[in-house]
Structures are given as C-alpha cells and as structure tokens.
Image (cartoon, rainbow, N blue to C red):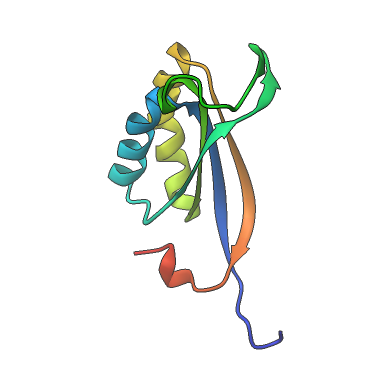
Length: 108
C-alpha cells in the first residue's frame, strides 16, 4: 500500500428530482467535470417529508443522486451554477474531501 499515491479531490453528491437530471448533467459537463455516477430511485426523508424510491410512472418522478469527484477549483463554479436552480427547486448538494488514485481520471 505504500506505493499507492492518493490525490485530494472534492466529492459532490447532488440530490434532485429526476426530471431535473438533464439540467444537472449539462451543468457538470459545461463546468468540465470528466465523469459522474447517477443513482436513481432514492428513498429518504427531508424537509418535504418521506420520499419513496420506487418507480412511480417514470424516472422523472423519483429522486436522483449524481456523484462526482472534482478538483477543488471546480467546486465554487458548480455551486454558483446550482444556486439559482435551488432557489426554485428542492434538492441538496453535499461537498466532502476525498482522496483518489488515478488522478488522470478526474483532471484534464
């Protein structure tokens, strides 16, 4: 394990309604994020009460999470891009410090 180099990045966990997924992926793509993971059908409880993760009519009606590992310099522009969105829609972004191997997968 001593030969493995770890590199600091920020992890963004973005939770929003599935119908807003295109907005979120466009914002991440335009910000230069190299990749992300999408998890659909989330369950949980928040300020709007309990939300079940089963598929109702289509994927637009469920909560979705995008997970992205980004360089620190991308965090502020991404959060600024989401600020007007979250003034009109429900959702949340969690930002945490992480370390990754293979930094080339996350930076240009």
